[in-house]
Image 1 (cartoon, helix red, strand yellow):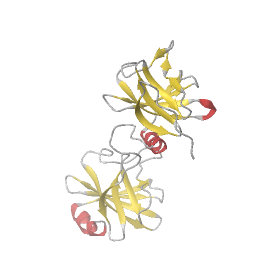
Image 2 (cartoon, rainbow, N blue to C red; image 1 turned 135 degrees about the vertical axis):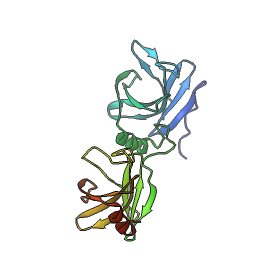
Image 3 (tube, helix red, strand yellow; image 1 turned 135 degrees about the horizontal axis):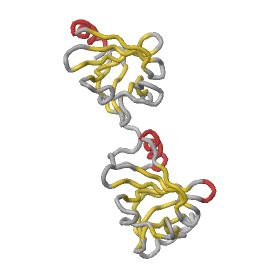
Image 4 (cartoon, rainbow, N blue to C red; image 1 turned 45 degrees about the vertical axis):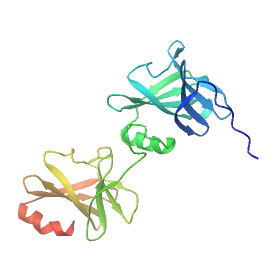
Amino acid sequence: RPPAEPPVPPGFVPVGPVVRGVELGTMPAGYALRLANGRIVPVTFGRNVRASPTRPGGQEAVAARPLPHGRFEVAWRNDTNGRVSLWTLAANGRRLSTRIPTLPQIISLENAYGHDLDGDGAVGLVFTLRSVSPDGVELGTTQLGYALRVNDGPPLHVRLSQTLYASDNRPGNGWQAIGARRIAGGYQVLMKHSSGRGSLWRLNPAGLRIGTRSLSPSDFAALEPAFV
């Protein structure tokens, strides 16, 4: 028979998922981690100040996980803007450092935690379909911006540079992607402006924009059926 789980200590209320044997919870004195062996590790910062839903204030702890060398990580979410921060804890629960992850890092972290860290209602990357071209290229959006998908594969993000993701807000100013298709050496994305004119983006196989071409309203209308 598998060994019985250690009893939950009195006053410990779970507030996050169990991640590789580490569970975040609250106790009357503040946040604590419950380990698989039943040990309780209080979460502290500064001069042994106990972290709690009101300390340090303006944010709440949402999940925890083990790190190498006996350390832990606690993910926090800002109550106002949803910003995520990460505390690295020593084996005794004392905060050693804090870092602010980028949005791509948060998406990866949500997969590692199996939990929604930023409060957007999703765990990991979510692809929302916008259009499908006659040759089967799907154009959609994720939390990062525009993305293409082929044969139900992973989303391929459309990028303006190595680190800059294209979206309705980037470039913005009335532009919106409406469709995509395959071409030799990559893809094309058809952009439409609120004025009726268009633009054709050329992407390399990795989704990086490598060229653009302006389209008159009549040119746009002629090309549109090949994209949607």
